Amino acid sequence: MADCPTLHTERLLLRPFEDSDLDAYAPIVMSEEVRRSLHLPDDFSRSDAWLGMAQWRGQWALRGTGQWALVEIESGLLVGRAGLHRPEVPDWPGIEIGWVLDPRWWGRGFATEAGARSIEYAFDQVGADQVCSVILPENVRSAAVATRLGFTLTESRVLPHFPEAPHDIWRLTREQWDRHPPASASPPPAAEEEDHGDHDRTLY
Ligand SMILES: CC(C)(COP(=O)(O)OP(=O)(O)OC[C@H]1O[C@@H](n2cnc3c(N)ncnc32)[C@H](O)[C@@H]1OP(=O)(O)O)[C@@H](O)C(=O)NCCC(=O)NCCS
Image 1 (spheres, rainbow, N blue to C red):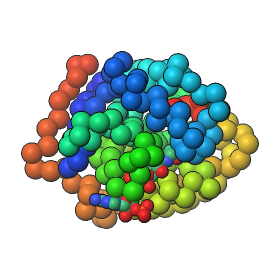
Image 2 (cartoon, rainbow, N blue to C red):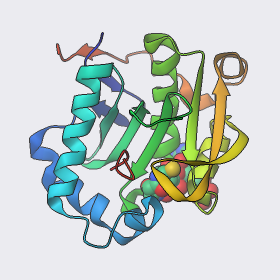
Image 3 (cartoon, protein in one colour):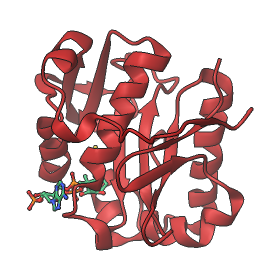
Image 4 (tube, protein in one colour):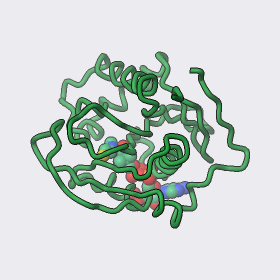
């Protein structure tokens, strides 16, 4: 089972979270926009952000899936996280592809770019036949990312990690992806992959 690898897209480095990311990551998940979208509490703290980073590294180590820290290559800045999510939540609909960006970096296509690379990883490295995205209906920006990536909204249901409201479940099969990958999905020719030898309570 692979631990968290480092991947590249045209504009982003997808790499494992490091302890030193906390100063940049905590304000992202503590921002009002992200807290509102993910229904995180107002007192969501730096400690909670650290736990989130540790959980992503832990999921990679235990399950071979997880999310990456996203670094914009040009500036070297941490701009968010994205990747695969396979939590131990009853009735979870499969390998989820997810994305969270620093609000200052919304509107540049980074979530779609990182999402595409994550989907490729799920199909080519993890061997998934299908991926999903679990999105609250009000989260139109996230639904737009899913639509751009070719996901289809297949059902709405209440999941145990968030009993307050139904989530929309978007799905994308390998066959659909092979037929219609978005242009941004192809890694640049010089893309390198290094192996680093190695929420909702499931989502921060
Ligand atoms: C969901 C979220 C990641 C979407 O971010 P986003 O910036 O809207 O999505 P993308 O990165 O794909 O960017 C797409 C936008 O960039 C624009 N764009 C600009 N330059 C671009 C480029 N070079 N390539 C592609 N798109 C580009 C697109 O036209 C699109 O603009 P629009 O929003 O006006 O239609 C962000 O809103 C977020 O972090 N929300 C809080 C966390 C969250 O809800 N996560 C999902 C939980 S289910």
